[in-house]
Image 1: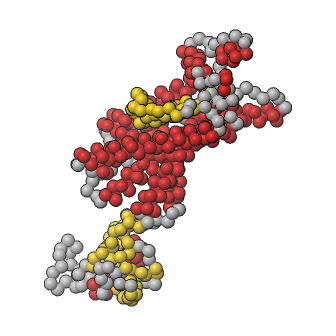
Image 2 (image 1 turned 180 degrees about the vertical axis):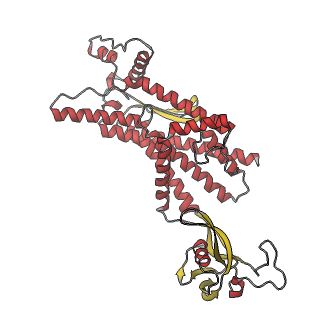
Image 3 (image 1 turned 90 degrees about the vertical axis):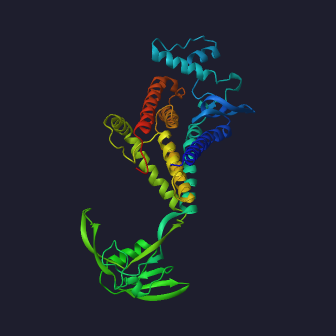
Length: 438
């Protein structure tokens, strides 16, 4: 394996991930500022700060570990009882009670209170209308979805899909006595050679049916063993009509019941030219939608999939190639792809597809309705909206804003679960990795 190329592939994926995170946070930042929320920080990464610069009221920066990011918005939650007591002069302590989880709630409230500014109390997140809070929190995942769509468009409609086209690459001179042998004197000419098919011919139709690629032509030829089949080819811009009689060979095929059976099929002795065929512009949205559905299916089964992955660490069984991977596994695959002997365009297409898949995963995963994920904040905002609507319906006074700091214990459990699952996947990708090339 080319070590330099492997490292380049890993670096490209890490940079692509950092860009994905930066775009995700921009998806939060832009609407937050547009709606007047005070944003203290915009950071890409975690850990020590590598670079930062303050512009206006916001500090923009990059941190050392590019595995996440955040923006710091004022007043993500309503002020704590203690802060409200200090503000209205009641002196209410607002204690959360005793115990570990109660202290956790109190700490969450204190951290939130630090973002509040009584002199600028209207520029806080929790005071926004429900739809604006949803737009802000949905902006991050949507940016990942849009980025995935751009990447898939580049792959499918820009580079294209590697396809065996209807252009003839080569024509067998004869039908050898045995498939593994070279042509010998006296061997009969292949059906394609006998019919006059030449390399460079573009197959236009077979048996009166237009064909778009080699696979369609091959299907029609295989269905007519020993029969005379009219073929129209384009040769240097001229339409040429030919007749070919496919030889009959026995091959294993998969029938309509999914069973492998022996079947007699027709062959004529030609190979198609492999080329990149650009797909229609709507192919990317279709591919992204299918990928979103597949990732959503994995997320629904997340605990089971993580358990199965953990079990492979004990049993040593081969992992599901379509299963879960950590960023370590994704980086290793990018490195493997970059280090192959395939043409550069092939490698670029695969890495772009991998980045698109990562962004789709970020989109789906962040919509899980649990704090601290974006979906959790959206759920809190919607619940607050439902409570306000119900109060209006009943003619009651508007309820106080939803105090999501009370969910700090559940948030803590979710964070621990995410750390544990991430750790299992990282260890599995190091000890029992999934490889594209076996």
